Image (cartoon, rainbow, N blue to C red; front, side, top):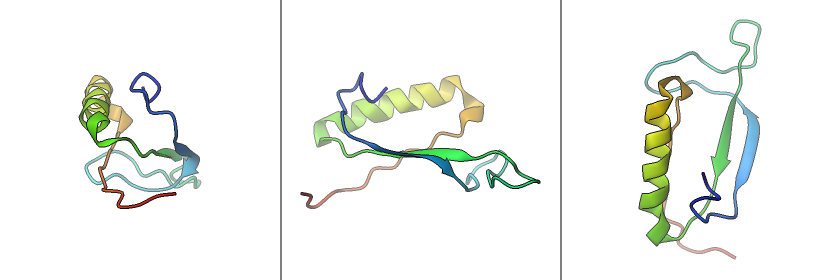
Length: 79
């Protein structure tokens, strides 16, 4: 989805723990809650934000158990 949105750079974490804010089971990687979550961080140009969010929203609606979350933060400076 990021490539189709022309978002080349990202960082991915394949094994993160946590619990969603709405519903679903925790992902702790433990005996009681063995699943793990993943996370992606990407910085995109302002003019791409709405298109990326729209695609993520549609993807999440097609797969309600996915538990996808996306956030927009302003990046003031970068190198």
